[in-house]
Image 1 (spheres, rainbow, N blue to C red):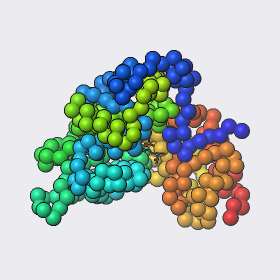
Image 2 (image 1 turned 90 degrees about the horizontal axis):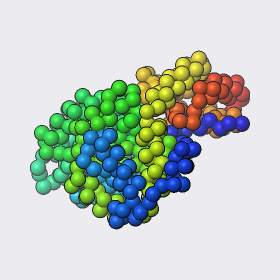
Image 3 (image 1 turned 60 degrees about the horizontal axis):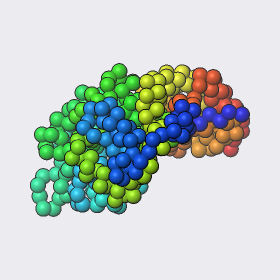
Length: 349
Ligand code: TLP
């Protein structure tokens, strides 16, 4: 039985072309900046995001952390959404390791932060307060439906940041999904930001890695932070090579995942026990909930779906996230629908 794993796009295994590139990659010691493959990936990434320089890191979490530590000192404050990945799912690293104070404001259902809320969260210069230093946005916004933030919106936040003397960091873990959905170059989406991270190991299907991009001076500071965090890797060209293949061969096909997410949503809309969230899917994530009259909760349903070879994320008591990616095929979509129907037809509690 084929396992259809929709829990995340992080589950993607490398393509055969990536494995080939990994086997033959030219390598060197990247802490000495002597790994030609890492250097190439960093240059390609910076060019794609319209920034001066790039830095290869083991994960998106470390990318965001190194960026925030490079922007802020201990006791500084950052403004971010209450549903931001950095706030919810990065183990409190910015506070634990950087002494950086998170100031959360509500994420709107489309992943944005209201400009008024940002303005109100900026601290006046007063000895009682932490110093506001940074605003962070997330594009696409994971918890808010995988929704893309437009270049216009990001520009408005960038303008506000500039006016107030703050920096803007973009957690662009899935910025290429946003670019594909909006039909806008990734560099346009990141232009207003001082720094941006993106992940190679999500929809791009590479096995490991993220890249942080920004100015030469900023990346030099972030490189030191990466070293402090233990993220200075040596012959990292082995994994960076897969990242290069990802940018060259998987990035151009991300739109296919969005089409499949739409087809999946259409199939799920025929299942009476499920309710699709408004606007889903915006990119490669289908979010749906259990209708009120359904007794079992999402984790019980997800557990039962496993028996049919379908893995989904139960992201709240009654909420599911199904993420399409490189290894999900058209033929799987009907089987996912059938698995849900079989589970609801069975007596599972
Ligand atoms: N997200 C993962 C989980 O941690 C929730 C997922 O399955 O979606 N920023 C964003 C917006 C992310 O979604 C993630 C991972 C990260 C950062 C962290 O990346 P990694 O897992 O490489 O540390």
